Amino acid sequence: MKSPFPGMDPFLERHWDDVHTRFCVYVCDAIDEGLPRELRARVEKSLRIEAEWEDPVRVRPDVIVSEEQDAGGVAVAAPPEVAVAQPLVIPLLDEPPYQRYIEIIEPGAGDRLVTVIELLSPANKASKLGREFYREKQESYLGNVNLVEIDLIRRGSYVLAAPQEQLPRKFQNSYLISVVRPKHPLNAEVYPCSMWEPLPTIAIPLRPADADLPLSLQPLLDECYRKGRYGETDYTAPLTPELSEEDRRRLTEVLACRRTKGSRLET
Image (cartoon, rainbow, N blue to C red; front, side):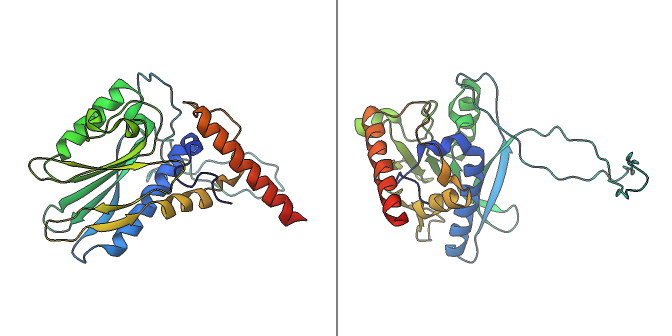
């Protein structure tokens, strides 16, 4: 089943760790297929800041598989007639949480960085510390590499490189994508996004001599929804922030239409 929202589904924010990871992988795969043969796309990770939350967000670390080379087996108590395998006992690692992002690199000495694609998370927007950390990363990219920022999060404060005060009023509270190329003066290319319109196909900048790479985002988000099995989402549950009255009314109509179609198919 598809999401009732043709564009970004705001209910996916509740599962953002999973959606973020899937989306980064799908974006990386889609980009890698169209890159010039000299370039590579890679999913990387950086430490995620999670402190001083103004609006608490539940976060989870990545799944870690590790092996302690010197660890020995420990006997497990069991009834004598039951054969129990001997496990390898290893200490649990207290790993810090990470955020994934995508780099397009030109392999070689030092692997020259060409483009960075950031899919924002609540951790980038919901606390002062998280915003400061993200803006430090952002500042290190601007003017040096191509920076693509995809903000599909409603919670938290504005952090994109594109100046918020220069956006038309109707875009200021929308989902947004910002693309900044390392040219002087710096200009931001902004793509407004919506719940009710499919996410756009955007231009991913590469090296100056390369043509931009088109990236269609909606099919990738749809794949996240399908493979994440979010078709059973409770769309009557409250959101933070709440949907506007108009969006809630429209969602109610769409859900009613889907139920009617489903009943017809059953009969």
